[in-house]
Structure formats: C-alpha cells, structure tokens
Length: 164
Image 1 (cartoon, helix red, strand yellow):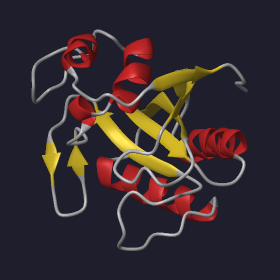
Image 2: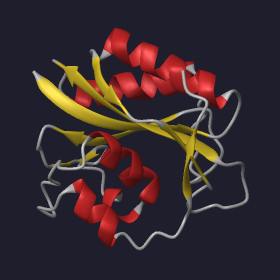
Image 3: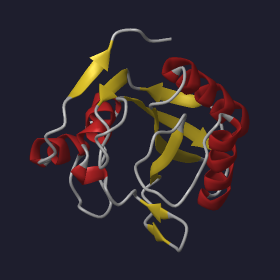
Image 4: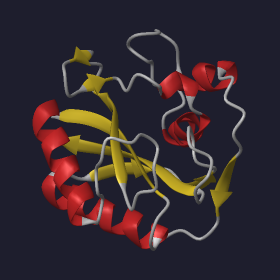
C-alpha cells in the first residue's frame, strides 16, 4: 500500500465545492483519505492578477502506481472544469499536484515526485506542516516543519474557517 500527499487548489467557480468534489472523486478512484488539512486562502502564485486560491493538502492510501495516480488526477481536474492550456499560473477550477508518493524520487517527462517546488511555496508547506510536520523530504532530507521555517516565500497563507 502506498501513502501519498496531494495539494488541491482552485480559484475559479465555487472553490469550496470544487475541493469537496475533488476529495470525493479521489476517494472513489484513488483510495481512502487518511488526513486532510484545513483549507487555506492564498494569493495567486506567479500571476498575481487573479482571484485568491483555496488550497488543501490531503494524505491518501492507494494501490495505484504514480503514473496511474497522475492519470486519475488529470481526469478529475478535467471533469471538474479544468481547462489546460500552455499558459502557467492561470485561473482554474481545480489543480491537483502530487507532492509525495511514499519516499520515491521520480523524474520523468510528465511527472516529478516530490513536486519540485514544495520547499519554495508556503501555500504548500503550511497545510503540509499541519498534517505531517515531521515528514522528511527525500531530496532535501529535511522535515516539512524545517522547510517551512526556511522558506523565503512572502505570500500570506490564511486559514479559511468555512470548511466541509
């Protein structure tokens, strides 16, 4: 059995409902959710001229391979209204990023695990630290808690008190 961490995010449409639907689809297609962080509100990263994002980290258990997980994640994004184009950091109904998959290090053309920007983004580290502060990043050999303390990202990450 594999343990994985995903970050879910979106800044278009009914953001809370999209996160809730994503979790239901992940449980149906990937496996049970073992932990989930609170929902955090953050300004858009990279392209600031768009609405704030709602982000949440979830930990799941699965029998899927990393490539099968990627395939299911992309299908869920598309079914919940995500339109992919070649522009980075644009508005979206849902984004599912694979953060960790066990302690695997995977680098292929379409998949990098752990996600290459975890250590640079507070909107990832804050919810990760809520549910897995002691998790060791397999590349940096540092805990999530330490990576958060060292993170230079200055974007504010606020807890959303309206959860589901």
